[in-house]
Length: 169
Image (cartoon, rainbow, N blue to C red; front, top):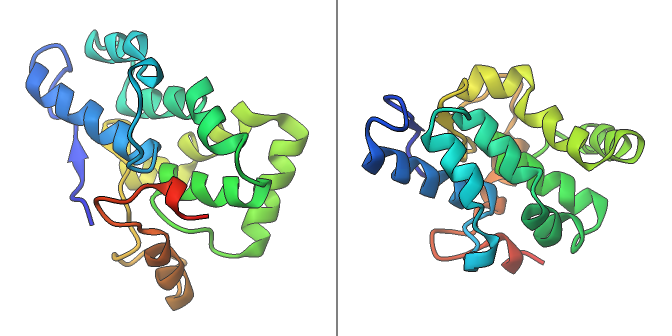
């Protein structure tokens, strides 16, 4: 399990720390997948470094990007896509089929961007990470409303440091 990482200062004051935060955000949002140079969004990074985006805003923008859409939305069925969103954006597995169905319906009715925003602007996200903490796998910690099966599901999602979410087919 990775340790929580919070943006400690304004991004443009401590560039080394900011680059570590950016690296962790990419690793979390893209499921440890290796990204090609074209997939890296330098303009979003610049907005983050300049202080125009919080960690929460950067996470949201990356998850709503064409790269995320191409890697996870277009290559998975809606149920798998929702499961991956929970993992990447909230650091946990869905609590059950009803929660998955709710998000599949939201995606169908309101679209891709609304589906992503429903995680990153949720009360759970703000309570767990605030606006300056990088999301991380919370499966091995106690969560309100969690159960043993949620612990098992979340840990089954974890592919390890050298794995990536594309290997989970």
